Image (tube, rainbow, N blue to C red; front, side):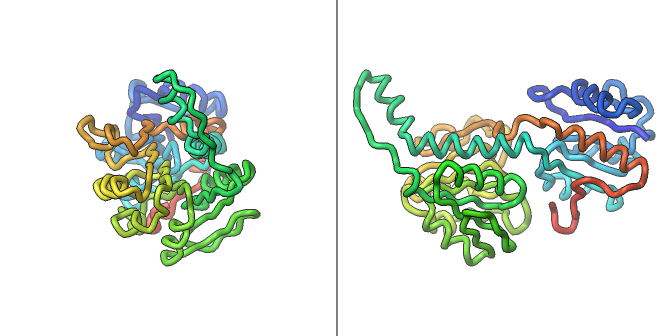
Length: 311
C-alpha cells in the first residue's frame, strides 16, 4: 500500500515538502509523488487539492481520496470516481484560524474606513471620518461548522453582535443562531456584514441569487470564503449597482483562477483575494498520515465524507 501526493499546484506547498512531512510523521510510510510514483497499482490512497478525471484510471487499486482541505464537492461529484472509493477531508485548526482572521480583517477594514483614508492620503487630504461603532454592528456567519464556529467566536470576542445560520440547529455562546431556509432572509436583513463559509451542495448552489441578495441590508458587506458557486455573480453585480449589498469581498469565485475579462475585477464594489484565506495547513498533515495508517489497518477514517450528503 502506498500514498501518492499529487496537488497539481505550483504556487502552494510542494508535493515533495508534503511527502517529506508525512514521512517524518510516519517514518515507515510509503509516500510517493508523481515523479516517484513507480508501480501505480500499489497506490491505495491519493492526497489531492482536486481530483483529476484520470486519477481513478491511473490508480486501479485506489481506496481513498484525501482532500488537502475542507471542500470536497468536485471530488464527490466526479463521475469517474468509483462508488467504492472513500473520501476524507481535513478539519485543521490553522486554516480555520486563517479564514476567521480573513473575515475579521475585512470587516474591520470596512468598520475603520481604511479604504477612505488610503484614498485621502493619496490626495494629501486630512479628512476625519468616524469609524463605525463595533457594539452597534451586526455580523452574520453562514455555516456553523468547524470554521464558521471559530469565525463567529472571534468576531464576538472583538465585540460585534453576531448572528449565525445553519441548516440544522446549533448553539454557540453569545451568538444568536438561526437555522433553516426560511430563517436566512431574516438574518440577512439584520446584518451589516455577512460572512459565508458554506460548503458546496445542491442546496447551496447559487443560493445568493437575485431574491436572496435583495434580502440583504442596504449598504451591507458580503464576504465569501466558502465556495464560489454560492453566489450568482451576474446577480451580484446588478445587486451591487443597486447598493444591496454595498460591497462584496470574495476569496472564492465560480471559476478559479478568475478570468481576466470578468467584470468582478473592475467593479468598484468588489474586493478580490485569490483563494488565500485558509493558506496554512499547520498540523493537518498529521491527519493525512493517520488516515494512511488507518486505511492500511482497516480502521475508521478521520473526517470521512458521506458521499450521499456531499460533506
